[in-house]
Image (tube, rainbow, N blue to C red; front, side, top):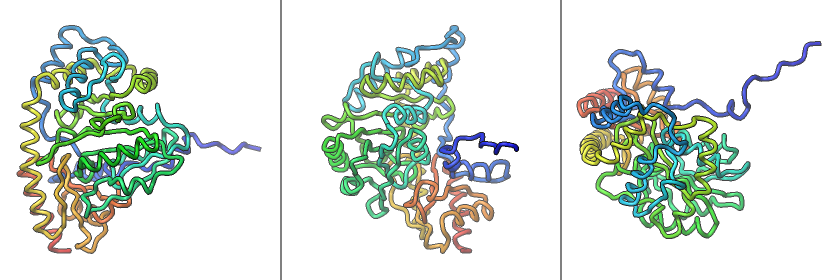
Length: 389
């Protein structure tokens, strides 16, 4: 009698859905005349100085493995950058790890600190990788609903109701992908109080920390006592237009960084050497480039926000990242129908809000990291589409 064949794949991975963002990216690829407001990627080319630094490192023969932690000049520059920006200094030898983008940093942080069954509080909606990352690390995601009327902030009073004896951590992805929400100082003060009262860990994913408009970004690591409880995650993809270079970093107490480094060591070894030298140049010389790009994103943000609201697609004002998150329920469609029909009828790519959690339903994410000309044309097409709805 032939034995029943066992599945070749991991059951935990099978339960994780593919990214809703990638599905719409794939639908649009190869279609002539598409305008994509879908994938969150700067349209700017990586500034020339950063590219030249990478080329120079290759010409100088710097093509071997680096330390698992990353090249020391980059870790020193990250330490200085964080001290200047956040008023918090990390030891470049023991408290900083250079990673393959912030995506790897988030994964390492979760795997290095969670035990099976630990609960992690996240905002709903939030970035698509958080729930799968928590599940793969053995944790249990606990989405806390956020609300349009409160600008999709993760409010301390809502978090407090979600805390149980099994709660291990809070994952803060702010400025937010997909909503563009930012946290207030009062939010951070209240969250820090809960972290101390319940002896929690914080994962602070601040990849969009430089992309804020009309407000100042504050990190929870600036709050008293939070440096010791937080894994601070940041990188180069968004603010420095370096998505394809895949360079991020984690800053945390040495005991945490050591465990993250072990996983990193056995999986990827180190970040590509030339990319690390490009990132180093970005930190040392790139401030004016960041400010230039942020100013241009702000122009685009204002145009897109006004156009959506003028169309009756109510959109709260996003103060961070590079996304608008309009409410499309006035069209009578759900977010999946809206995004699919808009793509088919008018060749404009957006992402259904439900890809980011239950509280994203009735919204779509539209990225303004594309040219003003394309944004205007996309909004003209959306106006035609909504007019027919």
